[in-house]
Image (cartoon, rainbow, N blue to C red; front, side, top):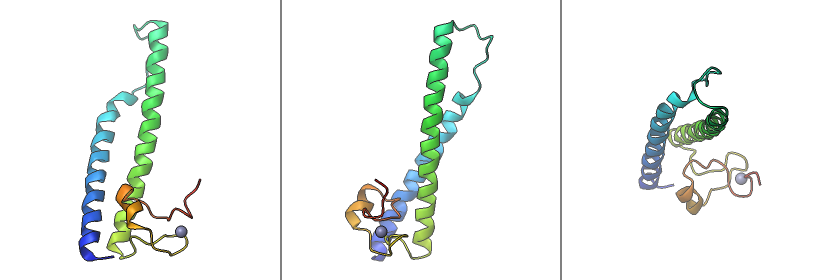
Length: 111
Ligand SMILES: [Zn+2]
């Protein structure tokens, strides 16, 4: 891959990393356990727990994505970016364009 392209994907990944770190920071505040003696009504409390569960799921996904992004950045540094880590084939730039953190090709991606 050309150096300009690598720089382009690196800056996109860095930006994605920054945004995820920021949003994970902000959602920290919503993970406090909901206290049982809270003044909220029963239904409201149930809703609060459900929305906490959802934000927990969202955080889990964001953390996973952040890991992939950081691994992709490592691949850029080691000169192996854009090559499938499973089959060693080139990952098409179109795929990287829509998913810069991709480390495996479409054929190897779990379906
Ligand atoms: Zn592959």
